[in-house]
Amino acid sequence: MGRRRGRQQPEAEGTVETAAQAIEAASLATQDTVAVALEGYEAAPHGETALFNLLFGFCTSFALVRLSTHGQRGGWWPFGSVSLGGRHIHHFVPGILLAFGAGTAALVTDSDRIEKALAVPFGAGVGLTFDEAALLLDLRDVYWTREGVLSVQVSFGIAAILASTIIALRMLRRGERRVEQQGLIPPP
Image (cartoon, rainbow, N blue to C red; front, side, top):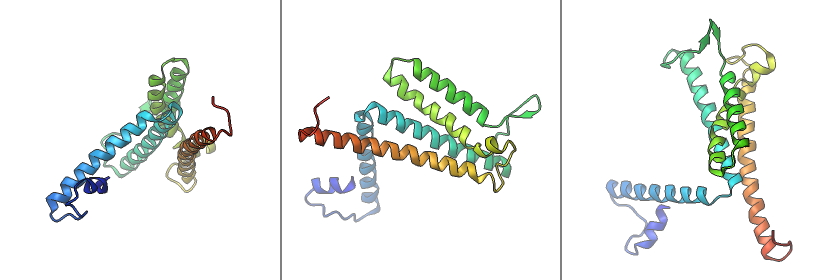
């Protein structure tokens, strides 16, 4: 984005001479990038933005819960584990509740805007749940053991599948438009 602004000013040769100019150029490039990203998000089809929101919720909750559990274990995280009646509540429990609640609400709403918004807590719930996939499969707490690596592997795999699906949908839509313009398939 920064190179675009340099082209608009013929006297600028794309070089920055001072730190203040570099900071100003970076600021403008950041503003341009945010504007382009927001416009692209708004222009994207409903399915793509819902999947993007799901991926965002999933990755954010996975990263935050990993940071939180690491901090609790290291003694520097400000909050402790959640217990109810002396029993530790693993984070897959609120994850399942969050995913089921958001998923159910998304199914019964008629609003695309609300449906896209609900994809974030749905993804967060799935992230919380799959972060403890190893515990759910082994039925014992293996979070910080060698067997617990399975949860990380499964979560990375899910994130990759979601990201790949978003990219594949974009490619298919772009290809559909081009093939339709060439008259090889009928319009919808």
